[in-house]
Image (cartoon, rainbow, N blue to C red):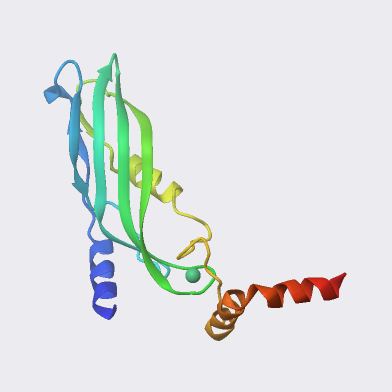
Length: 162
Ligand SMILES: [Zn+2]
């Protein structure tokens, strides 16, 4: 676990760029696939690891580059209920963006938009599991044990309530 954390922080500090040379694109459009280390956050509760994996269709329409496809990035997040670390993959599926093409320039930098697309998908309140019981651990364990106990106990309790 400790080793994983160190790895995540080192990767978070590396930043690459996702550049497209429009002049070299096939006329009908072209699909590109790869990975780019473009997330530069090194926060305590949000640690990216690896790069953004992308599969994008690039097409030029007039003076614009249209980009469509799927993005995903692995993160080590901290659960907002129990405080536990967990690994998850944040996806931006069916992402689209258009980039104006500057006269005389054929290189387009997709990095910032790709990065934003992933950051937008980060949950405000990450959960290690939809059914996370939260803290404190001992009580959560007790609650689970109680729920797993004989269903007749629950029925009895309901009768009392009436
Ligand atoms: Zn949790």
